[in-house]
Length: 383
Image 1: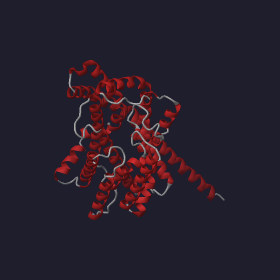
Image 2: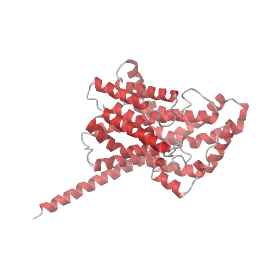
Image 3: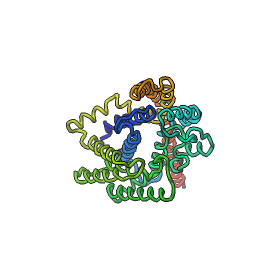
Image 4: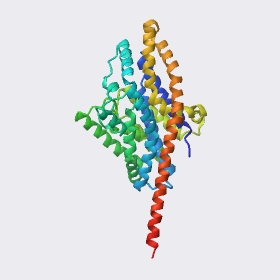
């Protein structure tokens, strides 16, 4: 299997879930589950864990993950997948921060919600900028949620990438199920100890808080050797990890939906050729959903820069003359096409060139290493 049909669609739906969930929060409209954008992020996390192991398995025949050079290549690929667009939108967010903060104050005041901390929108200091440019902000409670972007999950993602090679080596050595249980237990313990030590993150940007969900995705992608028993073991461990009460909201609704997400994704992956599941998988892999997935990263990262000004405009223009459902429909009707249009442009102008640059650097580094080995061999062979 070289491609997972449903993956593009699920990525696209996760980004759309986050956009609609934030639109509900900012317009005062609520729907069960859909108004919880953090669950959309949880789906992203699950998909990320799956995709990293899936790609590892595709490359395993010609990449020896015991070699640090392979780790470096992995890190370079992931950096150039995430960083270029983030840096562009970070600059835009810092410039627009004061205006967006004024919009957010108007929204929260109208809806009777607690005001957002002003430093999240107004901190242009060198420490905050350096923490974000280096992607260490997710490790620092004071900086983990300090821009107008929903970028806390990017810091989390980069932490996962940093440890992923070691998770793979452990999984290969002791088995994916045992490895996931051991790592999940360690992550939960670290999360509890950090909380008792007074490290309180405004969003779950610290990897131990969400590591168990990355592990769920990894288990679904892990090699089960064609054995039904091992496949079900991986599912059982994944569902056990998903119900751990750490990392954001832990009420019964969130825990139940996380379990359902794991079970549904497992079915889409391992029952993709059967009946209705196969039909759903094919739909999620169709061209419209493919593009929804391709634009998911840009949509996720930039939507708040557009959503908050539009929501503030709608509130200022109509106030309570229209109800929350109409306000939500109006705001989404304006925000969605603008967001996806800009995401398409940034995908073509920033994301794809950034990925191409990363691949070019890796090719150059590989060529230089081969050339260096050739020169050394020639010198050793010389009389």
